[in-house]
Length: 313
Image 1 (cartoon, rainbow, N blue to C red):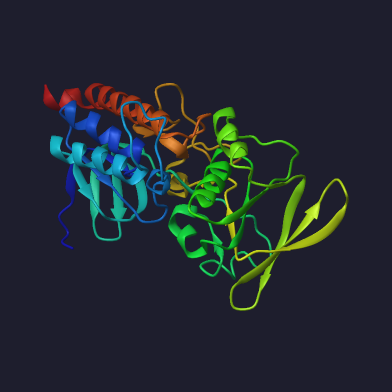
Image 2: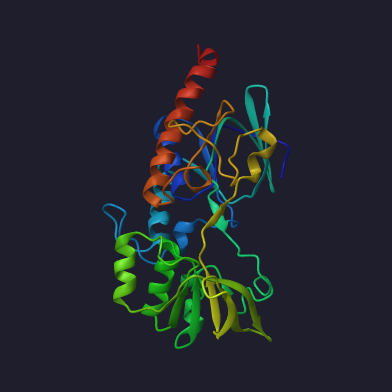
């Protein structure tokens, strides 16, 4: 690309529900806004097969997110498919370097979400795409009529197990505790389908030749290992926030890597805001990510207005 550095008031890194909402609000405040979409990590919302708890919407996550992004671009936000590689602060402005170009911004919102967390056991990486998956809606169809295992006990794991059961898989859930962490509504749906649960057990390794053939588990109560024949292992133990992009900026993160923000979605670095699953918010849902995005855009607008008003006077 050329050497011309395009100038924006606000650049948003991420195009999930937090990023798209921030873009909508940002342009409605009269800011020149660009929001950047990357393929890694993909927005968790796009992987959600059924949305039932987003007010006023029925459908899947991909459809909902498409509507958000289309709304942002309709209002005038620039949607860029570029991978943001580095963000630095130069004086009062920020420099955003992507794989294609370099941009300038007065404020930045980090809305990078996260990627699926790995267990870190033998066979996990070796069998990715060969029976190990982090997305039931992506890969479940390959295992209709076959025995599969879902690892986890939260909302995502229960949701994935229900989905796999619905499409015709012989599914079981493996959980390290003796009760699920999922919301009661999810649990009710789950147990009504009589999906078996292997309690108090943790995965030790995944085995097979060319593809997954079995999973070895350790029962913590009985203190013994045992194996179960399965054709697929769906891992649903949460996400790791994708926040390495802020390391050069000195943005504070907690011990798990989540960006620390206040109620205005401000980080410790003036002009840098964060929203959605990359933050230390208690609820990882589309509706709360949208709320974060709206607040972050408002805070960015207020920051730009105060910081740069002298330029417009």
